[in-house]
Image (cartoon, rainbow, N blue to C red):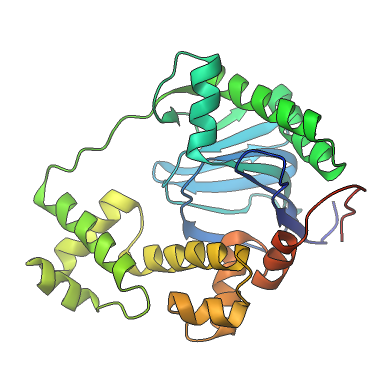
Length: 283
Protein backbone atom coordinates (compact mmCIF):
# COMPACT_ATOMS: atom_id res chain seq x y z
CA UNK A 1 0.00 0.00 0.00
CA UNK A 2 2.99 2.36 0.31
CA UNK A 3 3.17 5.26 2.78
CA UNK A 4 1.07 7.92 1.04
CA UNK A 5 -1.81 9.43 3.01
CA UNK A 6 -4.83 11.01 1.33
CA UNK A 7 -8.37 11.88 2.31
CA UNK A 8 -11.54 13.45 0.99
CA UNK A 9 -14.36 14.44 3.37
CA UNK A 10 -17.40 15.78 1.55
CA UNK A 11 -21.14 15.73 1.09
CA UNK A 12 -22.94 14.82 -2.13
CA UNK A 13 -25.92 17.17 -2.15
CA UNK A 14 -28.24 14.53 -3.62
CA UNK A 15 -27.76 12.09 -0.74
CA UNK A 16 -29.99 12.49 2.34
CA UNK A 17 -28.01 14.03 5.24
CA UNK A 18 -24.94 11.84 4.83
CA UNK A 19 -21.29 12.86 4.93
CA UNK A 20 -18.69 10.80 3.07
CA UNK A 21 -15.04 10.18 3.89
CA UNK A 22 -12.75 8.14 1.69
CA UNK A 23 -9.19 8.01 2.93
CA UNK A 24 -5.98 6.16 3.44
CA UNK A 25 -4.06 6.83 6.68
CA UNK A 26 -0.72 5.54 7.93
CA UNK A 27 0.53 7.93 10.61
CA UNK A 28 -2.70 9.80 11.33
CA UNK A 29 -4.48 8.95 14.58
CA UNK A 30 -7.96 10.09 15.55
CA UNK A 31 -8.19 11.18 19.21
CA UNK A 32 -11.17 10.25 21.34
CA UNK A 33 -14.22 11.99 19.91
CA UNK A 34 -17.88 11.34 19.09
CA UNK A 35 -20.33 12.05 16.27
CA UNK A 36 -23.96 13.15 16.48
CA UNK A 37 -24.82 10.62 13.76
CA UNK A 38 -23.67 7.12 12.81
CA UNK A 39 -20.35 5.87 11.47
CA UNK A 40 -20.44 3.04 8.89
CA UNK A 41 -16.92 2.39 7.62
CA UNK A 42 -15.89 -0.24 5.06
CA UNK A 43 -12.21 -1.14 5.39
CA UNK A 44 -10.80 -1.60 1.89
CA UNK A 45 -7.14 -2.24 2.76
CA UNK A 46 -4.76 -2.65 5.69
CA UNK A 47 -6.00 -2.76 9.28
CA UNK A 48 -7.82 -0.13 11.34
CA UNK A 49 -7.66 -0.26 15.13
CA UNK A 50 -10.74 1.28 16.73
CA UNK A 51 -10.69 2.24 20.41
CA UNK A 52 -14.12 1.90 22.02
CA UNK A 53 -15.40 1.92 25.62
CA UNK A 54 -15.22 -1.88 25.65
CA UNK A 55 -11.65 -1.94 24.37
CA UNK A 56 -9.67 -1.85 21.13
CA UNK A 57 -10.94 -3.77 18.09
CA UNK A 58 -9.16 -4.49 14.81
CA UNK A 59 -10.89 -4.25 11.44
CA UNK A 60 -9.27 -5.70 8.33
CA UNK A 61 -10.21 -5.66 4.67
CA UNK A 62 -13.85 -6.62 4.16
CA UNK A 63 -14.84 -5.49 7.66
CA UNK A 64 -17.49 -2.92 8.48
CA UNK A 65 -17.13 -0.67 11.52
CA UNK A 66 -20.42 0.52 13.05
CA UNK A 67 -20.41 3.22 15.73
CA UNK A 68 -23.58 4.56 17.32
CA UNK A 69 -24.25 8.28 17.82
CA UNK A 70 -22.39 9.98 20.68
CA UNK A 71 -20.15 6.96 21.36
CA UNK A 72 -16.60 8.11 22.13
CA UNK A 73 -13.95 6.33 20.07
CA UNK A 74 -10.47 6.60 18.63
CA UNK A 75 -8.93 5.26 15.43
CA UNK A 76 -5.42 4.49 14.29
CA UNK A 77 -3.47 2.18 12.02
CA UNK A 78 -3.45 -1.42 13.18
CA UNK A 79 -0.65 -2.43 10.81
CA UNK A 80 2.53 -0.76 9.48
CA UNK A 81 0.91 -0.14 6.09
CA UNK A 82 -1.99 1.77 7.68
CA UNK A 83 -5.55 1.39 6.52
CA UNK A 84 -7.85 2.57 3.74
CA UNK A 85 -11.59 2.90 4.07
CA UNK A 86 -14.80 4.35 2.73
CA UNK A 87 -17.04 5.81 5.44
CA UNK A 88 -20.64 6.94 5.54
CA UNK A 89 -21.84 9.32 8.26
CA UNK A 90 -25.66 9.28 7.99
CA UNK A 91 -27.71 11.44 10.33
CA UNK A 92 -29.88 9.86 13.01
CA UNK A 93 -33.03 10.90 11.15
CA UNK A 94 -31.84 9.31 7.91
CA UNK A 95 -31.22 5.94 9.56
CA UNK A 96 -34.52 6.16 11.47
CA UNK A 97 -36.45 6.82 8.25
CA UNK A 98 -34.82 3.86 6.48
CA UNK A 99 -35.44 1.64 9.51
CA UNK A 100 -39.12 2.61 9.69
CA UNK A 101 -39.61 1.82 6.00
CA UNK A 102 -37.69 -1.46 5.79
CA UNK A 103 -37.42 -3.04 9.27
CA UNK A 104 -39.28 -3.46 12.54
CA UNK A 105 -36.81 -1.18 14.36
CA UNK A 106 -38.46 1.99 15.63
CA UNK A 107 -36.90 5.02 17.24
CA UNK A 108 -33.13 5.28 17.41
CA UNK A 109 -31.38 2.20 16.05
CA UNK A 110 -28.27 0.79 17.67
CA UNK A 111 -25.52 -1.64 16.70
CA UNK A 112 -24.20 -3.84 19.51
CA UNK A 113 -21.29 -5.37 17.57
CA UNK A 114 -19.00 -2.54 16.42
CA UNK A 115 -16.86 -4.55 13.98
CA UNK A 116 -18.16 -7.31 11.69
CA UNK A 117 -16.66 -9.11 8.71
CA UNK A 118 -19.24 -8.38 6.02
CA UNK A 119 -17.67 -8.03 2.56
CA UNK A 120 -21.05 -7.65 0.85
CA UNK A 121 -22.05 -4.60 2.91
CA UNK A 122 -18.52 -3.25 2.54
CA UNK A 123 -18.96 -3.43 -1.25
CA UNK A 124 -22.28 -1.59 -0.96
CA UNK A 125 -20.67 1.20 1.08
CA UNK A 126 -17.83 1.64 -1.40
CA UNK A 127 -20.47 1.57 -4.13
CA UNK A 128 -22.19 4.59 -2.56
CA UNK A 129 -18.90 6.49 -2.76
CA UNK A 130 -18.25 5.41 -6.33
CA UNK A 131 -21.71 6.45 -7.48
CA UNK A 132 -21.53 9.80 -5.66
CA UNK A 133 -18.12 10.56 -7.15
CA UNK A 134 -19.53 9.82 -10.62
CA UNK A 135 -22.53 12.08 -9.98
CA UNK A 136 -24.95 9.13 -10.24
CA UNK A 137 -27.61 10.24 -7.74
CA UNK A 138 -30.01 7.35 -8.38
CA UNK A 139 -27.34 4.73 -7.72
CA UNK A 140 -25.84 6.55 -4.72
CA UNK A 141 -29.20 6.97 -2.99
CA UNK A 142 -30.28 3.40 -3.79
CA UNK A 143 -27.04 1.83 -2.56
CA UNK A 144 -27.10 3.93 0.61
CA UNK A 145 -30.57 2.66 1.48
CA UNK A 146 -29.71 -0.94 0.64
CA UNK A 147 -26.51 -0.79 2.72
CA UNK A 148 -28.20 0.74 5.78
CA UNK A 149 -31.12 -1.69 5.53
CA UNK A 150 -28.73 -4.64 5.37
CA UNK A 151 -26.81 -3.37 8.42
CA UNK A 152 -30.06 -2.87 10.35
CA UNK A 153 -31.42 -6.32 9.51
CA UNK A 154 -28.18 -8.19 10.18
CA UNK A 155 -26.69 -6.25 13.05
CA UNK A 156 -29.14 -3.63 14.33
CA UNK A 157 -31.82 -3.24 16.96
CA UNK A 158 -33.34 -0.56 19.19
CA UNK A 159 -30.73 1.59 20.93
CA UNK A 160 -31.25 1.25 24.70
CA UNK A 161 -32.20 4.58 26.28
CA UNK A 162 -29.86 5.99 28.90
CA UNK A 163 -31.92 7.37 31.76
CA UNK A 164 -30.17 9.88 34.00
CA UNK A 165 -30.86 8.63 37.52
CA UNK A 166 -27.81 9.09 39.74
CA UNK A 167 -26.60 12.42 41.05
CA UNK A 168 -23.29 11.86 39.25
CA UNK A 169 -25.00 11.30 35.91
CA UNK A 170 -27.16 14.39 36.42
CA UNK A 171 -24.07 16.45 37.24
CA UNK A 172 -22.34 15.16 34.10
CA UNK A 173 -25.34 16.07 31.95
CA UNK A 174 -25.51 19.54 33.48
CA UNK A 175 -21.76 20.01 33.06
CA UNK A 176 -22.16 19.18 29.38
CA UNK A 177 -24.87 21.85 29.06
CA UNK A 178 -22.66 24.43 30.77
CA UNK A 179 -19.72 23.65 28.48
CA UNK A 180 -21.94 24.06 25.43
CA UNK A 181 -23.32 27.35 26.74
CA UNK A 182 -19.85 28.72 27.59
CA UNK A 183 -17.83 27.11 24.84
CA UNK A 184 -15.71 30.20 24.21
CA UNK A 185 -14.92 30.78 27.90
CA UNK A 186 -15.41 27.53 29.83
CA UNK A 187 -14.87 27.26 33.59
CA UNK A 188 -12.05 25.26 35.12
CA UNK A 189 -12.84 21.75 36.35
CA UNK A 190 -12.76 23.08 39.90
CA UNK A 191 -15.08 25.95 39.04
CA UNK A 192 -17.44 23.66 37.17
CA UNK A 193 -17.56 21.21 40.08
CA UNK A 194 -18.17 24.01 42.60
CA UNK A 195 -21.04 25.33 40.48
CA UNK A 196 -22.61 21.87 40.52
CA UNK A 197 -21.97 21.25 44.22
CA UNK A 198 -19.60 18.34 43.78
CA UNK A 199 -15.85 17.67 43.84
CA UNK A 200 -13.57 17.89 40.79
CA UNK A 201 -12.66 14.20 40.86
CA UNK A 202 -16.26 13.10 41.34
CA UNK A 203 -17.32 15.20 38.36
CA UNK A 204 -14.40 13.95 36.26
CA UNK A 205 -15.31 10.33 37.02
CA UNK A 206 -19.03 10.85 36.34
CA UNK A 207 -18.36 12.69 33.08
CA UNK A 208 -16.04 9.95 31.84
CA UNK A 209 -18.61 7.29 32.68
CA UNK A 210 -21.40 9.08 30.85
CA UNK A 211 -19.61 10.50 27.80
CA UNK A 212 -16.56 8.26 27.43
CA UNK A 213 -13.97 11.03 27.79
CA UNK A 214 -13.01 13.78 30.24
CA UNK A 215 -14.66 17.22 29.97
CA UNK A 216 -11.71 18.90 28.23
CA UNK A 217 -11.57 16.24 25.49
CA UNK A 218 -15.35 16.36 25.08
CA UNK A 219 -15.20 20.16 24.76
CA UNK A 220 -12.54 19.95 22.03
CA UNK A 221 -14.72 17.48 20.10
CA UNK A 222 -17.77 19.73 20.57
CA UNK A 223 -15.84 22.79 19.37
CA UNK A 224 -14.76 20.98 16.22
CA UNK A 225 -18.34 19.82 15.64
CA UNK A 226 -19.62 23.39 15.88
CA UNK A 227 -16.77 24.66 13.70
CA UNK A 228 -17.83 22.17 11.02
CA UNK A 229 -21.29 23.73 10.93
CA UNK A 230 -19.83 27.22 10.63
CA UNK A 231 -17.49 26.17 7.83
CA UNK A 232 -20.45 24.59 6.02
CA UNK A 233 -22.17 27.99 6.21
CA UNK A 234 -19.14 29.60 4.53
CA UNK A 235 -17.51 31.12 7.61
CA UNK A 236 -13.70 31.46 7.08
CA UNK A 237 -11.58 29.16 9.29
CA UNK A 238 -10.06 32.05 11.27
CA UNK A 239 -13.52 33.36 12.21
CA UNK A 240 -14.78 29.85 12.98
CA UNK A 241 -11.82 29.28 15.30
CA UNK A 242 -12.66 32.37 17.37
CA UNK A 243 -16.37 31.64 17.37
CA UNK A 244 -15.96 28.20 18.97
CA UNK A 245 -13.28 29.16 21.49
CA UNK A 246 -9.97 28.13 19.91
CA UNK A 247 -7.10 30.55 20.45
CA UNK A 248 -6.48 30.98 16.73
CA UNK A 249 -6.76 29.32 13.32
CA UNK A 250 -3.71 27.03 13.81
CA UNK A 251 -5.28 25.59 16.98
CA UNK A 252 -8.51 24.91 15.09
CA UNK A 253 -6.54 23.41 12.21
CA UNK A 254 -4.61 21.01 14.41
CA UNK A 255 -7.64 19.70 16.31
CA UNK A 256 -9.92 19.75 13.26
CA UNK A 257 -7.60 17.60 11.15
CA UNK A 258 -7.03 15.14 13.99
CA UNK A 259 -10.78 14.64 14.57
CA UNK A 260 -12.28 15.11 11.08
CA UNK A 261 -9.37 13.71 9.10
CA UNK A 262 -8.88 16.68 6.75
CA UNK A 263 -7.83 20.33 7.32
CA UNK A 264 -10.62 22.92 7.83
CA UNK A 265 -9.75 24.72 4.59
CA UNK A 266 -10.18 21.56 2.53
CA UNK A 267 -13.40 20.76 4.38
CA UNK A 268 -14.81 24.23 3.64
CA UNK A 269 -13.83 24.06 -0.04
CA UNK A 270 -15.63 20.74 -0.47
CA UNK A 271 -18.78 22.18 1.11
CA UNK A 272 -18.55 25.32 -1.04
CA UNK A 273 -18.72 23.51 -4.37
CA UNK A 274 -21.73 21.71 -5.77
CA UNK A 275 -20.79 18.39 -7.33
CA UNK A 276 -22.40 18.10 -10.75
CA UNK A 277 -20.55 15.83 -13.16
CA UNK A 278 -17.19 14.24 -13.63
CA UNK A 279 -15.15 11.92 -11.51
CA UNK A 280 -13.16 12.91 -8.45
CA UNK A 281 -9.57 11.76 -8.60
CA UNK A 282 -7.53 10.92 -5.52
CA UNK A 283 -4.92 13.61 -4.73
